[in-house]
Amino acid sequence: MAPMTAWLIRQAGLLHIPTVVICHNVMPHERNWFDAVLARWTLGKADHLFVHNLDDQVLAHRLLPHSHVERVSLPSYQVFDLSTWTREKAHATLNIEGNVALFFGIVRPYKGLGDLLNALPFILSEIPLTLLIVGEFWESLEKYQRQIKELGLESQVRVIDQYVSNAQAAMYFSAADLVVLPYRHATGSAVLQLAFSLGVPVVASRVGSMAEEVQDGENGFLVNSGNPEELANAIVRFFRGQYAASFRSAIAQNRARFEWSVLIDKLSEPITNQRSKLEIQSKCK
Image 1 (tube, rainbow, N blue to C red):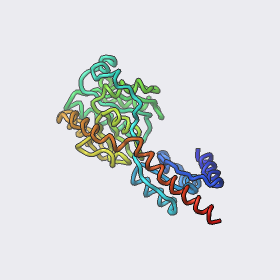
Image 2: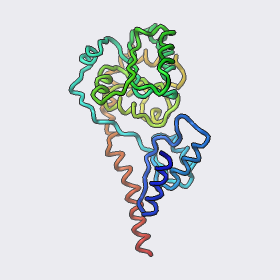
Image 3: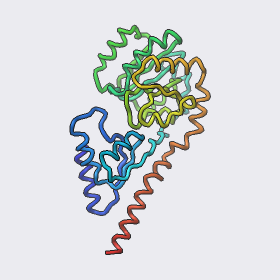
Image 4: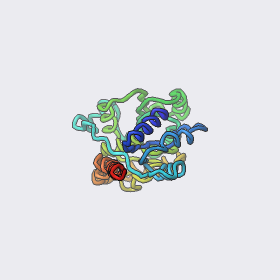
C-alpha cells in the first residue's frame, strides 16, 4: 500500500489538491527495518496527518518534524440492528448462560490473547465465566488450542474462527457482558469503538487510544499490558462489583464524543485552510 499511497499524495500535490491522511498506524504492528523509511516516504508530502493516540502523534512528529499532525478518535460504528437481539436471545442462540466475556476481531500476536487465556484460571477460581473468542486467526489457531487444553479450559472457552458479518457481530456483542482487549500494544482500536457503539463495557490494556478513551472505573477498567493477574483481577472486579449498569450508562452519556460528525469537522478544517491558502497563492501570481 505504501507505494500507491505515496504516488497518490504526490499526484495530488502536483494538481494543488490538499491531502489529509488518516493514519491508523504510523508504523506497522509487526516491524521491519525499512518501516521508518517507508513512513517518511509515504506520508512526508501530505498536508495534514491525523492519528489516533498520543504515542503515534509523538512518533509522527519525530519521523516528520515539518508535518502537521493532529489526534482524533476513531468514531463509533452505528451500523448494527440491535432490535434483533437481546442478551437472553443471544444466549439462547449460542447455548450459553451466566457471565460472558468477549474477545473479538482478527487474532494477531500483539492483541494479547495468550495473556487472557493465562488469566482465565485465576478468574474461574473466583467466578463462573464463558469466554467467546470470535474472529479469524492471523497466526496458528493450533497454538491457542494447545494453550486452552493445557490450562484445562475447553469447557469455558468457545472459539469461532471465521469472518463475522454485522448481523453476527451484533449477536456476539449482545451476548457479552464485557469485552476484553488485553493488547500488548496498540494505536487506535476499532473493537473498542464497536463495544462502545453497542453499549458494552470493556476491560482494556492501558495502551494506544484505549488509554485515552476508556475512563477507568467509569466505562470500563484499564490494566497494564502483559499482566494476566492484573487482567484477571479487573475482570473479577467487574462481575463481582456489578458495574455493568453504571458502565453502560456512562457509555451512552459519552456517545457524542465519538460521533462521525466530530471526525468530519476535524478533517474539514485543514482541507478548508489549505484550499484558502492555495487560492491566495494563485491570486498573488
